[in-house]
Length: 431
Image 1 (tube, rainbow, N blue to C red):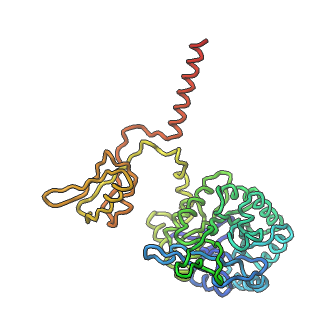
Image 2 (image 1 turned 90 degrees about the horizontal axis):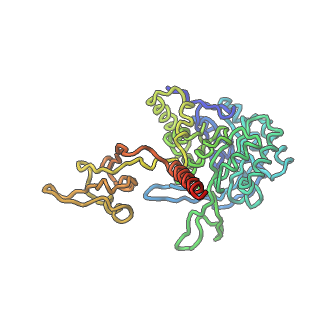
Image 3 (image 1 turned 90 degrees about the vertical axis):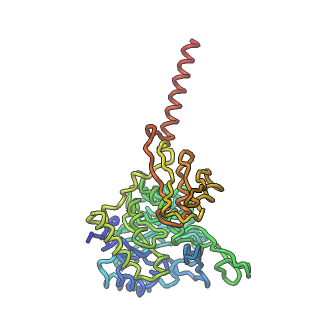
């Protein structure tokens, strides 16, 4: 059995599975139940000046028969008194000294407010702090959350204020509602952040009720944008984690968040540079005991790969993640259809004929009709294999390259060099 323990910027936990700051970590009762189930850590629901929440506040996007493909909320930070939360944090840490207890914090962007709350939460024994610069609704309208997180100078300044008094590691939680997440990640590092966590929720509206014409959710007939999370945001989160992980100016540990539902998602985030992960929607959908399968699955995967610790996964795929201009233009794959498995549903033919490159023919022989790929016309786009409902019916096959690898950047560089030589020759001819 592999070693699943992690060390995120000095914060240790027995496994990489943490609950994210959200409704599942609202009380000591909940966090202690989670630890009993096996979670390695929890980021307490964001603390600050207690607020008033609305009713209702959650909505979900169901898709293709899957419930909660995406999850939307308009809930704000903790609406319970700070003193109550601090007492429960102390009790929880005393009961579970080996688990990571992180305090998520959000206050007005002033040095005094940050200093005050940091001192209070560290006094009760938290293992670290997470600065919430990501909440996109409600708090942002008050100058906090994403309103701060979208401005690199404010991210840097407020991180610096916290680091002036903090004695525990400081994690900065980033908003995805920004053009370049590495800009705020680098700002956090300049401010002294020990780690970053991402992503927070994405600006969203879950839907509109076609009978009442109310937004979903609505509060007495009025709606507002909320934060989107759940499986649907995983590709966005994974990309943003990867962008930070491959940027040398970031260079701090990453706590990955966004659509993580099982051990496979976890392994992907670790491979793309996260040291550990935080989970919310999956726990809200299925309960705390999902962590048992996550632990077992990750253990089995590491054993299968011959790895002795989860740390050996971290960042292994990052060197393979680059920009489009660095991809080999001469690499070639084509689709091949396995007639023994194909059920002739024609979905691949329709998709290719209508929306791709018209390279799948419908043919007939004495045994009946069948589909065949015209490989010289196939561009290897993968669409046919994506829409195919039968595993193994279509395989994407790598062809032996006919030319040496060349990227777009290399091609453009060669063209520029050739043009420079031509220009020089022209000048010499004129002179």
